[in-house]
Structure formats: C-alpha cells, structure tokens
Length: 68
Image 1 (cartoon, rainbow, N blue to C red):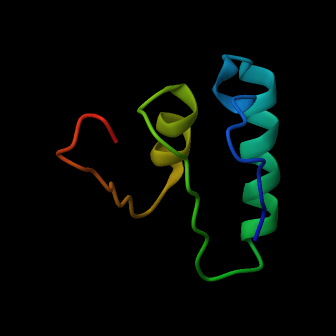
Image 2 (cartoon, rainbow, N blue to C red):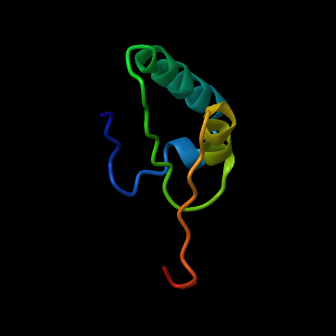
C-alpha cells in the first residue's frame, strides 16, 4: 500500500515529469504483486487518465449526487 496525503493535488498539478516518474515507480513495485489498486480520487484529469491507460481493468465509482 502506497499512501498519499489526503487532499494533496501534487499529481493533479500538471507536472508531467512528476506524474511519469510516479507511474514508473508504481510499475516497478507492481511487478511483485498480482493486483495493484490505484485510487485516483475525484475527477477525470491527466493523472487519472494516465493511470487508467495502463490498467488491465478499470472500475469507475460514481454517484448521482452532484454535491458529492
């Protein structure tokens, strides 16, 4: 389990080098596991799309409550 700080927007900030290096690090760690779960948080931004593009399976959790 790799934990990120709650409310952190560092990876969503549009820094492609940071995003790329983070995804590369997760890919290295993932080699030792059968399943890796990445919780990308709310929204469909560049970081979420980058993770989803590399996934074998994507599960999207949605709500009909626009305020959530």
